[in-house]
Image (cartoon, rainbow, N blue to C red):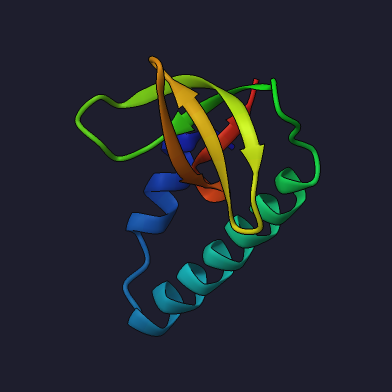
Length: 89
């Protein structure tokens, strides 16, 4: 199923209970993926940051792994980034 097909299926939902249930499943899946990613990252790894900022997707290097976030070096600046926004390259 493509992203577009998935989006059309979701847009077709008309029951708020179904949408809330879907949202809870998606939130749990994001937490699960983020938790497993945390154990697969190491300082020096190249990553992509999928933030909802004006600059869009950015690339950086992991500098340090903390309990809930990673310190990522982006354009010479260090940022504390939650694992939910990080994708390993």
